[in-house]
Image 1 (cartoon, rainbow, N blue to C red):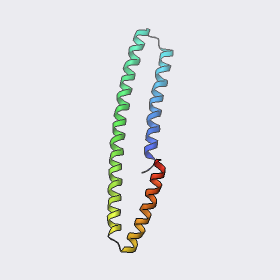
Image 2 (cartoon, rainbow, N blue to C red):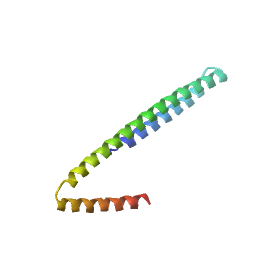
Image 3 (cartoon, helix red, strand yellow):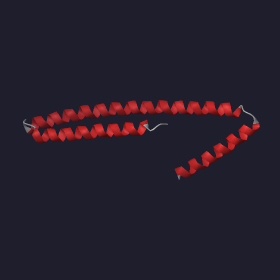
Image 4 (cartoon, rainbow, N blue to C red):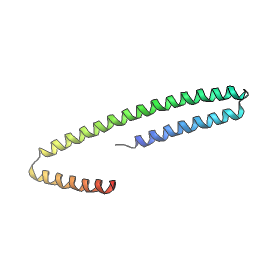
Length: 108
């Protein structure tokens, strides 16, 4: 997978942080009564929260699709490798064993 997923998380965090800063500045310079300001903040928070939830759902759907795509690509590559001659099969088994060991080590 690419580094796009990490960048998406950073963008989402930046948006939420920007909204929080905007709300804080709005409170400081608000010419309205406190009760009206609190209502506005609550409404803005709710709309920002809904927007963030929507973006998270979109991100989860995107990641799920990418995961399915990668799994499909791996399956196709393995099927093709298995259909090769015996020497290639032994190379594939060795390679997969090394990757499995690395994966087990990384998850400990």
